[in-house]
Image (cartoon, rainbow, N blue to C red; front, side, top):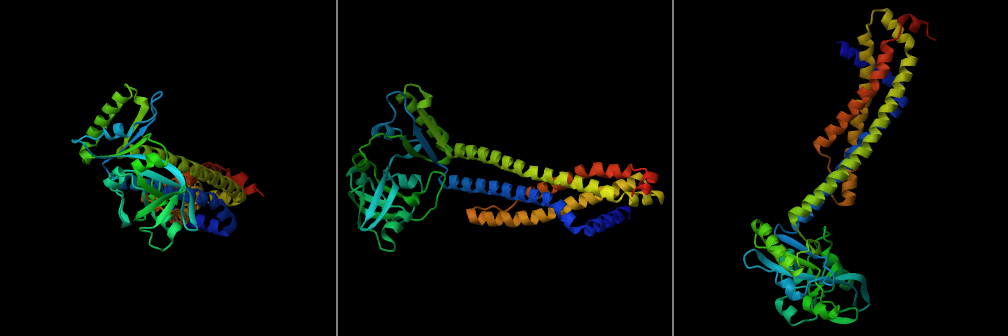
Length: 391
């Protein structure tokens, strides 16, 4: 009963000064809202990036060549020699350049053209909406054909069927043989905004034969490490033991790196938002000190009527916890709504997790308790005679 009575007194005190109580809770509300929204956005971004990496294929290996001395790249032959019958199913070197693509009066400026071979489709799990992808005979014959990303096709042709049409890439004619299905952006860029041509055609189109990026598909997820060992051994021979001349990464390494970065980012965002809670706690302590001063005579009367020190202490602590608890609940509601709105705007799944909600609410209550103890203790220690004399 003592606790219920203390809660009633606390609620009555809060309601008697509604505006002041709301402004006191505002710091807690903002703090909890910020913690839930920012952490949810961070976690949602992590889930989104993780999903994109996993969609790249569990067998994917990416090789980046930095070079050693005068050897800053690989030749086509050396890149294809990385293939191993036991552990590596497919190899596709990639050469990229930026061009202006035109069809009639329509043009797309600064679009990326990737020179790839036929294996690129299976390695990157590319889906073709209409037509076909690059075939081995296109590569060997150095055919001037192109496969368009979804967005490029829409900008150049609109709703007209592009198959068989001739486009100009930096003034050179290429026949469209396929259009990719829309896939959206990923961690490695968006194929929707790219154009693909045969790799050997790219040698002459871009006047560049230097291979610096290679996509490789292991025969299975179980052989990824073995495939990486084979690639590493061959590249060490080419670059005379210089491990800094190249970088080999698979999906698990990318995931590990991304998760490490996003976890740190989420922690940083949560810490920044947590500062708002501390500021809100200081506001609660300030108002509680004012409340103690305003209710000095009331405290003196209660003590004169037999209230003990712990009763006064309990009353003010419960009042402080009620302020922080109500602020926490309102913050959770606003934070949840804000997370969903921002998640929709950013096209990520940003729903708050139960652990985030419980953590932020618990922290708000702890803040209320911590900053309410000093004013409560000050009230409990008032001398009843001096309190009754207070004007």
